[in-house]
Image (cartoon, rainbow, N blue to C red):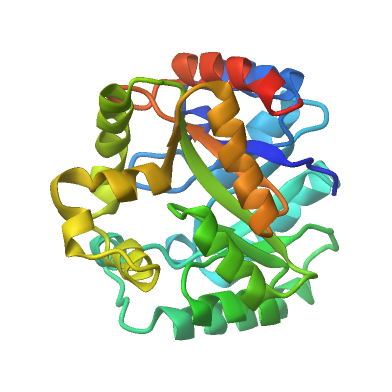
Length: 293
């Protein structure tokens, strides 16, 4: 699978009306980005169906689920969905699977007490399902932040898809994964050079994630404290999580992840109030030359 160095993670590519999503995916491919990621969350479309729609509207770009929630379907359904999409578009699909977050899982009526055990058991069941499903080749990445899930990503999957992390985390993740596993971090970006405006946009994005224990615990491991989490995030944390400035500054952050061991970086362009696909495409267009696309 050849996906290059840089892709796109944006919630509206999969969530937008189908024709708008198709046009956006074709534009992202034409700009030279190597991947598009569709998420699964409250209010999103079904990620495998969304991936299939976008794959059919493009020619070369890879589609990844970032992530497909294991609590949303049983392991046999997950395996069958992945095989179906990968079989229809050989070499262009990447399965990202994750355990989500306690508050979100509780809303589905599930018990999040032992997420690592749940993932391990789920992977066992997927392995059994693959024995009777048609054959299809595709990488599987686990949504992973902390050491034990990263170790499981090394032992039972093709690597890890990380989110809401600075390059320092990428270096730690690479050390755990070893050299032969894929590592694809998401990186939020804002093409805005005014510090106050850029950080305001960043904090609007970060506010929700700073309510989720998984992200907070991971950031604590990296040396951040409760003071960094207050009022939408300290300047130090905001600048670590969201790359802002001109295209060269954003390209520098991408390079920092690559230098730290990432194989590919998925960019999430942020807009001032809510995710805006047209604005994201405009930012991606401006970024492409600085990224060497």
